[in-house]
Image (cartoon, rainbow, N blue to C red):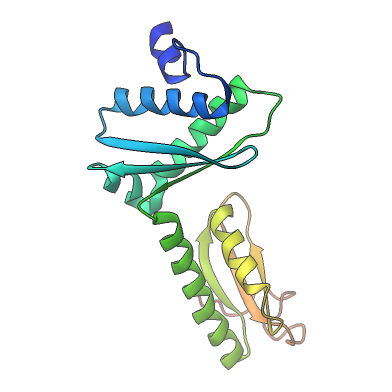
Length: 184
């Protein structure tokens, strides 16, 4: 069993630094999973690395809104935290421009709902999203002073409420979450 974990966590041949740990761990993971993927690890800036996957099994990483890609990213982050506890290293993984496409779809949805909220002068909602997706929407909407947004709900997945900035309390504003919800 130790051989399995040492291959996953980069045991064996030692390569220094975060980039080496990422490469060794991904080689073990891709090999054990028998995936037809290749990858390139690039240092973007200090303590930030980008991993770009390519190959026949790209589709597997993109399925179900990129959940496998997110899982591999989380796994690599945990390996780095375990192997380099004194350094905060960030890893971003992408596959064929998937992240950019997904973010653009979120921005397009936010733009559409912003226009609906302004036209109807009432709140609209985006379905429950994970934190990284909510951040994309909130950052995009922050540039427009005509609307505001906030996350609503408990737990990891929360809805986003988009509402006109000049709404009075009780008329679908941020203080009234019981108004009629139109979720998209």
